[in-house]
Image (tube, rainbow over all chains, first blue to last red; front, side, top):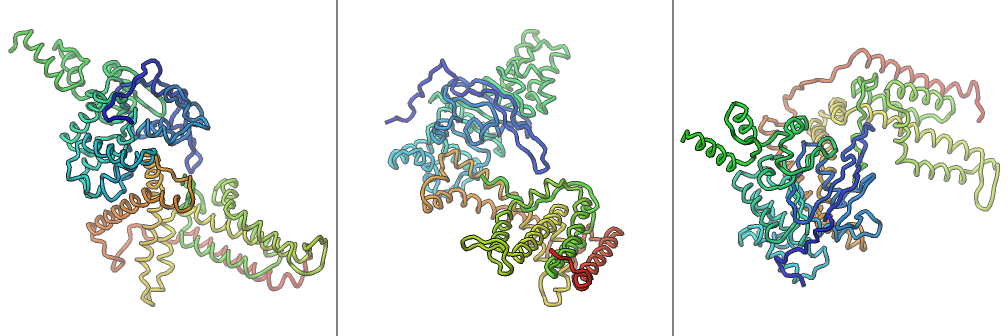
Length: 300
Length: 274
């Protein structure tokens, strides 16, 4: 029996998820052809923390649903650990336990009388026996940082941030190897946002989980992810390390996205003559860099 | 999954039919459907077909789109035709085993088929060229006389428009909820009927919670704008008849007279044999 917090066995030789020429099209009521995802290919390696960004309608959500086999592509396919997930005999239900997807609105999945029962839903569907499911649910609720008094509360009585945590626990309880989160910080205050993202980052450090974080916030992505994929109009526009992606300022702007504010400030500073590096995208690093330059020139 | 549910099947484009007042279109469709059921003779049907063809041309809706609207009634059509074709008594043409094809049977099924097809096409044409909200709006105007009998016409129309407005939203929401639960390993397809029904609980509960939340928000938003029913309420865009509507009504009267004339007299004067 799997013990909790066991490190997921990492096979670094094959990508944990591989998308190959994914295409997903549909027609609107007026028969207009929309290419939600068009010829998208990438590899995701075990243990990566990936930020997926893109404007509304760029195809992010569809891409997530293709990765978890909730939608079928018109052409192309997805491999999970080298196996084609759209093959006829492939067990897609098991896959969804391995590649956990947390939707944007927790209201779409919370349904049971208590948080505890709700978190048990996933593991029970995966065929785990009740006792084991309850043990896992207990650990998971603790892990996402919900207080003890939430266990037997109705999920509908929780606050916004608590609902989100409960929803994430509901997916985590299936013990996924890849965790995909769609806009997990939308509608949270800054403190709640930082807590939640720290919790997600710790999941990777403690359990070796692969994380795909979808976000509008460049700051969040810059701070936690090490690789960024940018979607624009159904295509994968950029796919590189955080600093390399943020170097493409004009491409990002044309995709309706902005680089982190901090980076804009640093660029403005360096172009007005202050010799600071402009490949900085977190507030802390920026403060340090500005101090360094000021000290170097003996201003302070 | 639930994707192809279209209740408000409005086809957005600009055409003579689209610009007509929704009241005109309702009356037009009503009279037209009535005309299909009064007489049973080929001349009348020819006129009705002509009228419908003109309407379709004026609506600028692709013919393929119109024909596709017949899909839901194909089974009903086939059933009526088969039943009437084989089980109508009269002068026998061919017979085998228990089936007998008679001249009367052929006539009856041809009439019924025409009637059904015209009926569905005409009512589809109305909903394709009129947005659901304008339809309920027009119904409110047309039902105004019922106020004498203390029928809350405005409130009923308001409830209808809200219900119509919410259908696509709730369908969309159901899809999202189903996906969120499938992502947690829910299974809506396997098992017997009891298991299948039970598996819907994780969908129905969030859907209800969300529907109530939306209803609550809407009620608050309406109250914040001082909505208190139809009493003394005026409209931003009151429905107004224009010249095209008058022309449409005149044409409709001519059509009705023509149909009555053909149905009552023409058939006797020039008997058309089928």
